[in-house]
Length: 206
Image (spheres, rainbow, N blue to C red):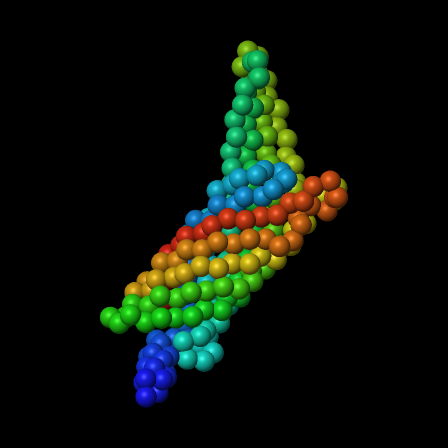
């Protein structure tokens, strides 16, 4: 008898959760710093914006397809004798996350969703701009280094895994998670370069 009641309770929970999981389109933006081992620059601030479409598969389970742009940046300054140098590192990436999610309703249009899955990432641009200025004479020199040029040792494509949770209230969505790259971005055998980092964001369900 207790087992029958338990089965009915679980079935009712899944049915209720299934009603809260539906097809929807959303827009997202947030903060996503990046850490890369043995790369041009190790730590960078990152920002992203994009769209996602969630498709209900069965009950409380859904599959989300996304497309987002990510912009990473870091500025460095240093002085040697009378020469002041600055470096600005920038990177632009296109991400395509494919995330399986599980939604748990709490009533009053509040849901908690747990998600996980792969994220395909492609670097559209990577550049380091350096400038040195001599304080006495005022002479300066500038240089740009393309991370993905013909003689570059760095790959532009990365396969990442992402996981996290989202709290949804009506049409607003607050989410956070962690991503980790599986591929070695360094073409040479001297060092291995992999990326990782957390992300937090705010979304609006259309």
